[in-house]
Amino acid sequence: MYGSRVVVVFFIFLALALMITSTSFFSPKQATFETNLYEEVQSDPAIKRHIRITTLYGAVSHVEIPKTNDHQVNDFFNDFVLAHQEAYFTITQHPTNRLKQEGQSSHRFLFDWHVVDEKIASVVFYEHWSVKNVTYRFTMESFLVDFSTSTVYSSKNLLDNQSIKSIGFQNKLEQAIHKQRLFYGQEDTRKKTINQFIKNGVFIIERDTLRIQGTNSNLKNNDGGLTSIAIPFRNASAIMTPTLMKLLPIRENQNKQLAFTFDDGPNRHTKEILNVLMKHDAKATFFVLGMQVEMFPSLAKRIVEDGHEIANHSYSHKDLVKVSAQVAKSEINKTTKIIKETTGVTVTLLRPPYGRYNKKVKTYSDLRITLWNVDPLDWSSRDPKAITRNILHDAKDGSIILMHDIYATSAQALDDALTLLNEQGYEFVSVSELLNQE
Ligand code: ZN
Image (cartoon, rainbow, N blue to C red; front, side, top):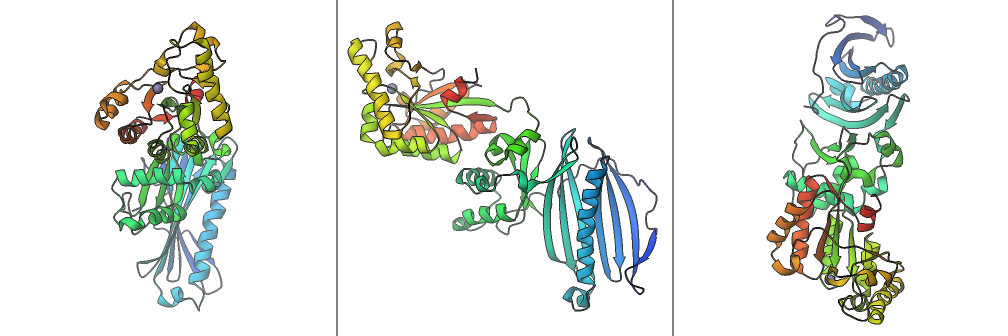
C-alpha cells in the first residue's frame, strides 16, 4: 500500500526468518521477541533493507532500517528508526495509555528508496500506528543522502519554505492536480486543499522530479493509499535552496528555453497576458511603446514587478527607416526615458517597429536591436487555436516568439501554448536571459 518500491531482487540474506534471535528484557517480566530479515535492494548506491520485527507483549513493531555501505549514514538511520520504535513501545506499554488498554496495537515503520544518481539517494519513511487494525497515527519523513560526504539531509531543509507557499508554485501543483483529475472536493475548497496537501505532505527528491506525497480527503489516491504528484525539477527550481541545486546532477535537455515577446503595449489586454504568465511561472519580454506607457503607467510597473523584462519599441510605432534621423532618435530615446521614469528600469533592447532597421538606425542609440524568429501571426489570425498551433509548430530551443499584448485572443493562445510547451520541457525566459547565454 505504500509507494512503489525499487526492490528488484528479494532474497533472504540471513536465514533467520521466523526464528527468535534474541530474548532480552526491558524489565524482568517483559520479554522481547525479535526477528531479523534482510532484503537486497538492487540499486546503485547499494542498499539492503533490514527488517526487524519486535514483539513486546501484545504490541508488535515492524521496522525497516536502510543498510548502506556507509557507516555514518547507517548509524544515523539506525538511531532514527530505533528512536521511533522506542517511542512506540514506551507509549503502548504505559499502563495508563489507551493503546495499552485496548490492546492489539501494531507499529509499522517502512521506507522507500529512490536513486537520484550514483552518489545521491532519497529515503522516505512511513510510520503507521494502528489499534485493532484501525489507523491511529500516520506520518512521513523524507531524507536526502549524499554518499560523497556521508551527509544525511532532511529534505524539507533543502527546500525554500517561502517559495513553496508562493502563488507560482501552488499554481503549478494545481495544474498537475487538474491534469490528473485528482481533485474531487467542492470547487471552493480547491485552494485550501492544495495548501493542506503541501503543509502535511512530504517532499521526495527523485531522479528528475520532486514528488509530493500525502493524504487528503479531497484528493484521489493514485499511489497506494497516498496522493502523489511529481513536478519536474525544471518546474521546481524556484523552491530549491542553493544547497540542493549544488547536490543535483546537471542533466542535458533540462534547459530548453523560449523567449516570448509582447509588442505594442501596454494595453488593456496586458493584464490578461501577465496573469497567464504568472499562472505558468513564465518570464517574458515586453517591447512597449512610449505613448502606451504614458497611457498605462501602472501596467508598465506591473510588468517589471512581475519579474519580466521591459524593452523599447519606439514612442509611436513609426517606421524608423522612413522617418528623419531626428524623428527616429526621438522615437527611441524619448521611450527609453519614459520607461526609466515610470518603472526605474534602464532598457537595453530595442525592437524597431515592423522589424525594420538599417545601419543608420543602429547608430541612433546603443540599445541592442532584437527581432524574432517565430511569428505565430497572432495579429492577423485572432484565432487562439491557430495561434497555439503555429507556436507549437515553429518553436524550438532558443526561439524568440513574436506576440502582441493588444488582443484577448493572444492571451488565450498563450495559456494553451505554455501548458503544452512546458510538457515538452521548455522553460520560458526573457530575451536578455536567452541572448546572454550565447
Ligand atoms: Zn509593433
